[in-house]
Length: 181
Image (cartoon, rainbow, N blue to C red; front, top):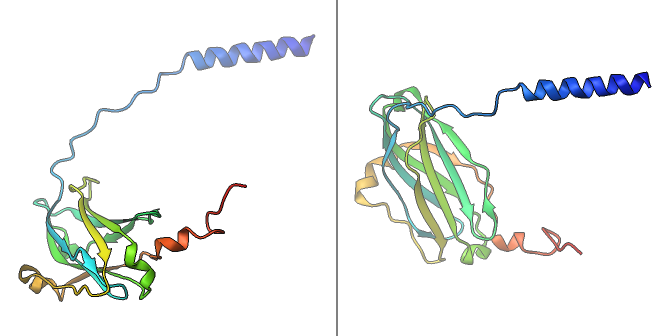
């Protein structure tokens, strides 16, 4: 009987303690200032498998607070790969331009695959630029041409993107995902 009384008293105390808690509320968003801007970006929309996909980007931040460049890769039939973040060097915090590249294995199974790369630049206050989306498809006869306005950026490497890309057909074989039987 004493145990039951103690248990009831504990439950009542717990109930009263929970009733006195503040309801969940969110803080008002703080204006952190102007976000960085991706001024321009270019990547050939079609390349041949077995080549490096060259992605050119130009960005600026009037306050000189850019901190990182995030790259998110999506593949039809597969989904998103883990995001890659490249920290910018001190001299690139106000403005930068150059190229990223992604190596594509030389496997003809890429012929029907589709990718989309999204780029976002963030500053030290975690303000993000508007995302830029660049599509990618494959054609054995495709040759990447660097547009004239990007010729000066061909010697300014920002980063190598290390996504471990595979053909979507590799994900659709039985045994990789398989059935739920």
